[in-house]
Image 1 (tube, rainbow, N blue to C red):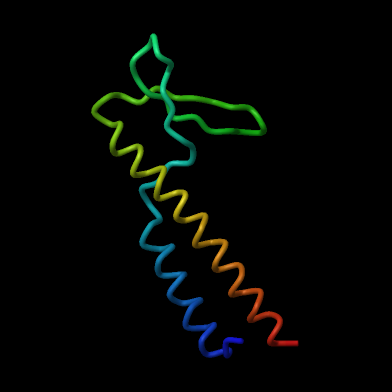
Image 2: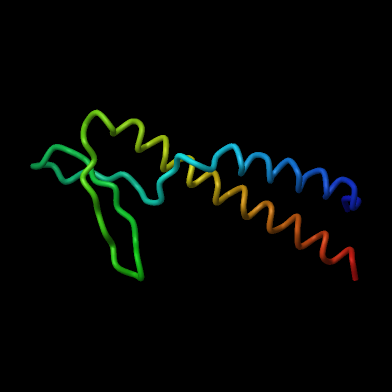
Length: 92
């Protein structure tokens, strides 16, 4: 069981990691247009409806990096939620 001091330290580190990733990220995933159509799309959902946007060839690698950043942010936010929950339980 971690102490409150350790949890606060972990909380601060997670906050800094999230801050570093904020800015240039995209929600969604990169997918191909199919075997007969070269190119890529960024697909994402809005209100349970899948949307897609064409990715220009020269932006493909950048878009992939940006979607990976979003996945990392989601992971860090889940870890931060867990730490915050543990801190909340300690206050009882």
